[in-house]
Length: 481
Image (cartoon, rainbow, N blue to C red):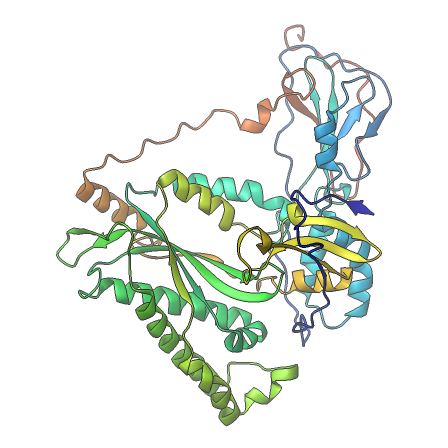
């Protein structure tokens, strides 16, 4: 089917391909009637009369490839070989389109409506099923069809634009200080419980981790100041296993109770052992309270944990275990912070770039084995298509769940006032407001053939195809009465 070679050298020790069908928790033990975040993206440009008369060219038009989101005119310049290779690469959507129907049939009654909508969104993203528009060049007459995106937050193809928009909004919030990266991870014994209670325990993970950071930071024994936090939830390991953890980006300093700005040490923010101990206590205390109030659900292999004594016995070794909290070295500057946020904030369980092959043997993809060191950490795994879909579905977040949150000085209720106060304390000028263009950027999208301006000439609805290409020139604005 679809194939792409890995972009790395083979290990000198021989083949490192791993064939795996590891048994993981099932996707869903009960049917839920929930709705998904499935939205259709409207065309980015609107109808308009071009200022000059375009010379539309006749000729049969064929798609660049069977999976392309655009078309080419037979008389226009052909796309470059590089562009063809990019369009021919394997996508998660290809696997869902081929193996998705059989997977849904095999798990009928065990997939929620929200999960089914996510699958449908990924399969139909940038296809005629979601509609689209036709755009043409005013100069050379080249025209192409662009299909709409699904805009689902779990779709690997739809995160680029969302990340750019989010980063543009956050760029003005950056401060001229060092930024630290702190990660809070749940142990396996608790992660299994969180899998069956995603909304409740993912929220508890956010609250316990943020309260831990704010409590230790304001302690005079440590930083002695109130800090700001941007937190991002990830639920996966590199091999698509269930591994919930929170990434935090924290400015290196805060506002003391007396109003002063207190800077952290250049390469040290807070002690991770102290953070881990408080995080463990806060999380377990509230987890037991949720169990006592009957708000937790248990299914399958952990159904016996519904009994309180068994539940406490299950948590007994976790109370003595060191919970993983680690802090990475500070970023090199605001640009490095933005680059990191671009990689992490809108990431999905697996990107299309990590896919290598999809055939009758299954799906082959790259992953990192963190138990190894150096170049040998990069590994390759092959799993059946149904197993790949199951692992991907493990990481579909509950409907309406916020995976990016802000705390402390960066909380939405006080962010603007806090940033103004911090800049005044640091004697830093406020960032200049970005110029807003009069026209949307998409209105002047360049032609891939001649560099001219592409304009939208037709919109078509979901499930429809556009009409035949135009054979006559649109009326010239200057010659119109």
